[in-house]
Image (cartoon, rainbow, N blue to C red):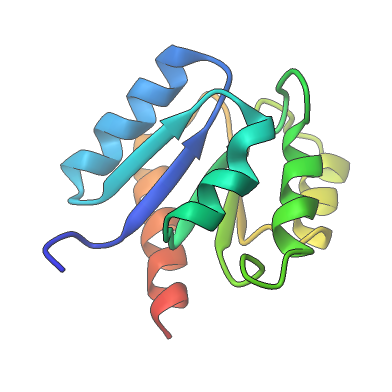
Amino acid sequence: MATHGKILIVDDISTHLLLLQTILHDEGYQTKITDDSKRVVDILLKEEFQVVLLDIMMPGLDGIQVLEKIKSNEKLSSINVIVISAKTDSWSIKNAMDKGAFDYITKPINIQDVRNKVKSAMIESIL
């Protein structure tokens, strides 16, 4: 496999999707983007992803509900989910981690932070 792994990016704001996609393409990752939180589980069941970058505040299903669906699905529970959110309070971060998030990135995003956390999640998914 020529790429370093495949990442699904979920956010309802297209500029966030494009920014994250650009950062990760520059790092050599293959990405797929969606702004529809209700489709995430279907997408993950159809294609193989190592990591999901998941926004919390979205219409329809919020990121925490999506995270719970991923973690409760036997086929998907091993995928590393990194939550991305403008919520920086300790309860939101703890809640996401308690629900099974691999890591948590706060907005506005720090590009190096994204690179480092995605790399850690990728390494973890290979082990």
